[in-house]
Structures are given as C-alpha cells and as structure tokens.
Image (cartoon, rainbow, N blue to C red; front, side, top):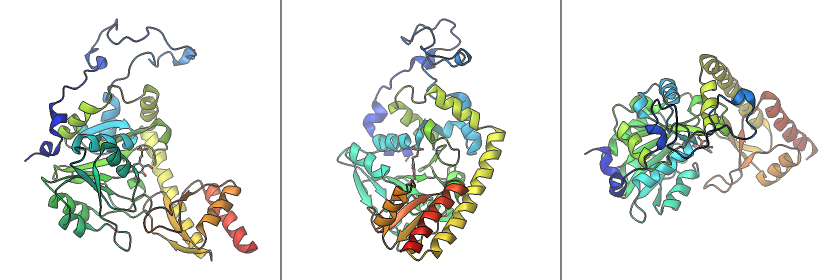
Length: 359
Ligand SMILES: Cc1ncc(COP(=O)(O)O)c(C=O)c1O
C-alpha cells in the first residue's frame, strides 16, 4: 500500500489547472496569461525589477531549494504555501471525504485543524493530551477509528508549549502506517530542545511536517510556510492548490531573510527568546496571583492566574495584549503570553507587579 491510497480518489482523478507560468520557459514576449505588459501604478523606479505585473512562479525554484537546505530535506519534498495554515487546509481537502473521513487532534491544541475539518465536512476525533499536557501516544495508537485519515500532532503545542520527542512521533507514525498520514506541526520547533521530526521522513512514508517562516524567522506578514512530505503527497496537494499561491513580494522577503547573515541573526534571536522565556517563567511564577506556568518549548508561556479575566483587562488597559486561552478545554484561567523583546516582557511584568502591590 502507498500513501496515495489514503488520498480522496476524486482528487487523484481530477485534471489539475495548468498554470501559464509553468509554460513560460525562456519566452521574451509573454502573451499567455492575460497580464498587463507594464509595471503597476505607483511602482517606485527602483522597484521596476520586481515583476508585479506578472503572475509568480507557483513554486519558485530558488525559494524551494533554500527551504529544502534549511530543513535538510530533498527539494522534491517541499511544498511552499501561504503560511502553514494553507498546507493544513490542503491536507484536509485532499485526504478527507466530506461526511466519511475524519482527522484526529489532541486538545487543547491549535484551532485551525478543527476549522479546516469542519469546513471540509470531515469529523474530528479528539484524543486529549494527558493530565500533564503531554501527548497520549498510547490512545493515538490503540483507539483511533478507521475513519481517521489525518492525525495532527502539534510540537511544540500551541497553546500549552510542550514538545513531543522523536520516539513518540516515530511510534505513532509506525503504528498508523497504511492507515493515516501523521502531520507534525513544528511551527515553534526552533525554540525547542527536541529536534525536528524531518529526520524521520525517509523511514515513514505516512509522515508530514509543517514548518513556517512566521515565528522564528519574523516573517508572519509574508505568509510563507511549508509542508515537508513524500514527493507524491506534495504533487497531490499541488493539484488542488490555487495556481499562483505565493505573492512575489513575500517570496522576495523570504529570500532576503534566508541568507547566511539571516540565519546568523535568527539563531541569535532564538537564543534571546529562549533566555527571555526562562526569565519570564521564573518571574511570573513568583507572583502571588500566578497559580501555574506550563513548561514551554515555544516562544510563549501558558500561565494560570487566580483571576485571569481581570488580569487580561488590566494588561489591556495598560497597553499590553495577551491571549486569553480560557475557552480551550482544561485551560480555564490560563493566559498565553508571547515572548517579546526584553523591554516588552519587562513592561508586562511591571503591570502585573504593580497590580499585586496595589491589591
Ligand atoms: C501551531 C501552529 N501551526 C500553524 C500556525 C500557522 O502559522 P502560519 O500560517 O503563519 O505559518 C500557527 C500560528 O499561530 C500555529 O500556532
């Protein structure tokens, strides 16, 4: 059995849209895509080299090769899209038949898996995290219904912050071989002590990994993320992806960041975020109103307060916004606090200390 047997048969059968850009070759006169032949109004003279009047390459070779090198995989395994959000949506649409198939998630976790499943009419099977918010690998391996085609493992998990070790991922992928595609969402892996699961891709055909430039690479506004998976899976998803998913300015921003200097700066920034995360965990735990600080492998902390809604409001009144994650199962009373600059983090602490003093 191949992983392609898990794909919706109608997706395998459909005739994909043929993009004009892939046919362009070396043509000097491009009259095949109904584009404008001149730069857009307002284009700065020094921006004339940016061909905004032309549709972009669907998967720009230079970007794909750079991402492949960054994530240490073959370029045939990389599908770049508008953030990893797009890959989640494509996966659910390609693998889940509405009203028939399902995804599995481990709540409390990132909400987009459930949103994409609901949009597609696919069921959602919840395999909750264990009491200590670690993954329940045994239940994922033993109790999953046959309807589950996709299993989303979020490592480090948003919003709790815990990462999953490679041994657990491997165990789950092996147990579900020929049954489901296991997708490890590594949006925050750069901040974690555990390595990426990309080293397991060769051994496990049913494994896929989501990476993004939105977090460690400071490019959330560019919307560039990718799926690393078998080349067959990449090519199935390209069949249903809109023809020109990656805006030219975003690709240029990613290329400007993914240089040796960019890598160096990003490495230093990651170290800074980790140091600040550890400082904030200690400082927050000292505050009398704080009841719990979950251990985090990401660029945020999930913190339980005695009066979270009031803390949220007071922070907001002082110009500091955090995320109230109290609506997630088992996270009543928790706020998720992103790690900012040292000054921003100190500002948040200042507001919290001041309210303790005046209480
Ligand atoms: C766990 C997780 N996965 C994926 C995403 C989506 O990231 P993007 O679409 O920006 O790559 C996020 C965003 O917050 C996230 O927390």
